[in-house]
Length: 332
Image (cartoon, rainbow, N blue to C red; front, side, top):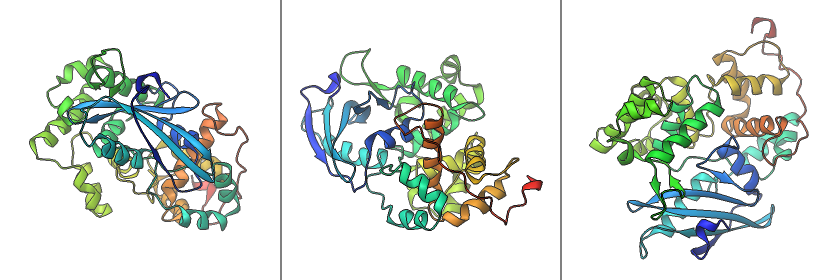
């Protein structure tokens, strides 16, 4: 386990099979320089906010892909609190432990190319941020930037505004929540590399949550259209960010963010198409995988990471599929 949790409280989890911690962790962290979600080759490590403080967790996979078991160690936080239950709840989201993928397996089995991709990354679970607010801030940070730059910004934000585990200022920090950012000066976020508009959007959302004017977690009970309308009504939030939050924050696995340029390009390559895809064409193409287009999104992400030599995914490229006849490739 990570030195940060040596000697801490321990418990085990039994994920549904198949499960692979390495693949799921890479779909969650996306880039190697992510300082919030860390992977040392054996353990997934993170800090989580609990009871006004923070706990450090380290998760190691035991058993096999088809008979998985996770050993979890945690340290920090108030003793006697419900920290274990809070960590369990967070890990269920972060590692997709409560998601039933039987339907996705059936969809993949009916599509040879998707079936090959799914088999290659068998054990991947669709990750989700532990709070909708964290998903929202992630989306804002990555707007109109490369993912690599966006993750640098998020790591800096956490290093300055995140809650430390214990008294060590150089130790791990939990991703900042609304109360951590509501009092922040947008100018200070700008000094971390955020644009003024992004800084004001993040602080404004945090203040709205703290003031009770905005309940992001309540969006879990909203229909898609209502959730999209609420999110795009927030300052600095457009359709791309809203759909990103719906997938990675609300766990809407039928959502494939159609305005995500990187995801569109991954999809185009997988489909074997030339030219660019429009938002409408993305929705048309992914409709065949409903309600698991978002699951395909994560598989294509891992395929891209493997092609670039990142992560622990196999380096063998997924086969291209035959172009679908209902797409006019000369119009894209």
